Image (cartoon, rainbow, N blue to C red):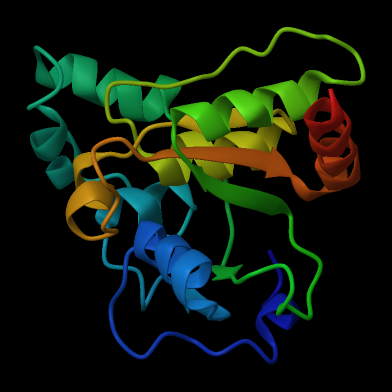
Amino acid sequence: MDENELVGVTLVKKKVYSCQMLKIASRGGYVHAATENELSCHHERFVFGMGLLQDIHFKNHMKYVKTKDIAKRWFIENLPKTKCIGIAVGPLSKIHFRPDLVFLPVNTWQATRCIHAYTYENGENLSFLMGSGALPCAYGAVYTYNTGKPNLVSACSGARIYGKFEKNDLSFFISFKDLDKFINGLKETHKK
């Protein structure tokens, strides 16, 4: 939200997708950042508040919905959005900033364990939000940032193509403020 949060974090050298950044950080261990100038996807620039809603958004979304009006309504009313100037990602062990979110790339069993861990302390039910575009940037990062609630999301076609998410990959997002609770829940449920 503030340029100071990007100080000391290397901006990516070429155009990149935020889902690519997550995979690179989780597999390669890199800490890196991107602003609107480095983000490739017009959808993510819109959901992160770095770009305006344009006709190309609706045209691209027509493969998932019946009419252009439905596509417009989805973007305006249903798609989680925020306003930031950049994103920074990296493994928790290597970052020097306090993150807002934790992203965990998971398969279905690991997702189940994440749910066990998150609900260990209070047994609450979790509801996960997804929409027709299945954008992990919106439904994972932005939704969790805006609400403080965890979300389990699949990958959009861009995340599969450019972010190298496999067909069975899921993403579990939680607020960083819940990390200690989550880790304790994971340890305690593992013991049992």
